[in-house]
Amino acid sequence: MKSDFLLKNGKFSQYSGFTLIELVIVIMIIGILSVTVIPKIFTSGGYEEIGYQAETVAKLRAIQLRAMQDTSAIQCLLVYVTEKKLGIPDSNCSPPSFLSNTEPSSTIVKISEQSLSFDDQNGGYSFSFDQMGRPDQARTISIEGGEQTLIITINAEGYISAN
Image (cartoon, rainbow, N blue to C red; front, side):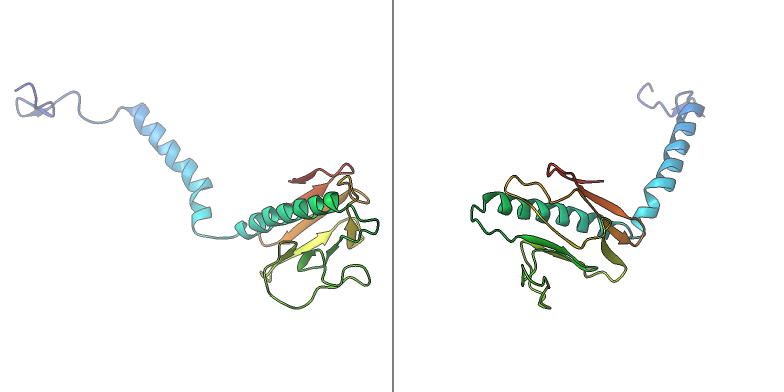
């Protein structure tokens, strides 16, 4: 019978099975997956840093927009960086400090993971944006710990990027 291609006269057909090239390609794909994807499935390391980096960039851009829309003569939108928090502090102008509340904020990033921390690599732990959205100096802020260190840069013209 022609429709039965696996058996022809009680023997296996010449069309059954895989070619050597197909087997080699499948083994190579499995090898690539085992090296790259499989280790990420069994650990959550590295994802916290990426999440905090995205949140920090979004909140820095919100603070920058707020500074650009503030038309008052006395502007005090100071961005304060500590080991576990970054954002506009509660006591903003003098001396900057964060309250110990745990409420979510649109301008404060709080790291709750013990192994992660912020580091302002420019030495100063506070900066501000002018009405054009530019920082007082170019900044490099890193999120350190865990499996990787991620960098957030604010260039002199105000562009905020995640590296």
